[in-house]
Image (cartoon, rainbow, N blue to C red):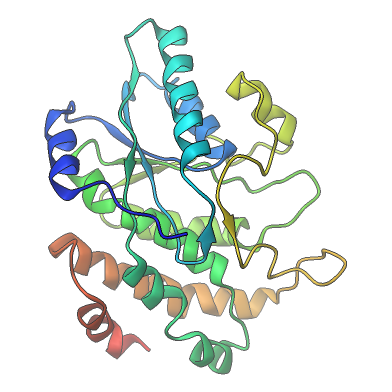
Length: 264
C-alpha cells in the first residue's frame, strides 16, 4: 500500500499551533507508544506531536495506527488530566530519502563491506526524517528502540547501531530520547501501555522483516563488517542527507544523490 502524507499546509498549521517545546514522537508499533508514555514522565516533556512515517517496503493500512493513536491520547489524558497532551497524528514519509539510504547503493555496499542490512539504514531514516520538524519545535525525538527483545537479536537495534543513530541525530542539536532502551522483556512494554496490544500486531508489516536471520531465526552479522558499515557509510551519508533535508525538506532524489557522491 502507498501511504499518503498529511498535506503540507496542514502540517504547517499543526506545527505553528503547538507549544515551541513540543517533542516529536515516532509513532508506529507498540514500543513507540510505550516510549511516548515513558518519555512524558519527564518534567520537560509535556506535549508530543506523534509522527507516523513509513518505508517503501511496508504494507498494510493506517487504521490500526489511528486506533492506537486515539487510545494513546486517552491514556495520557487519564494520567495527567489535561496537563500533558499527545496531539493530532501527522503522517509524513519521504520514499526518495529512504531509497538513497537503503536501496540505491545496495550492491555497492555488499561489494565494499561484505555486508548489507536494509533495517539499519531504515531506522536511521526514521530518525533523520523527523529532524527538520524537531528543530522547529522542542528539539527532541522520542524513539521506541530497545537493545533487548527477550531472547531475540535485532541487528538494527544492537547497542552499536543505536549509538550511531543517536550520534547522527544529536550532531544536529536534537536529543534522541530512548526511554525503553534498557528494557528487556516484552511484558514490561504491556505494563507501560496499559491496554491490550499484543507484540508485533496492529502496525504495518515490512517485506524485509527478519531478513538478517538464517532459516532457524538466528541473527547473521559480523561485528567488524557492521562497525565499518556504520562508521564509513551510515553515519557520514545520513549526516549529509540530513543537511540536505534541513535546507529543503522537498529536495529530490537527484539532489540527495549529488550530495553524497563524494562519500561513497
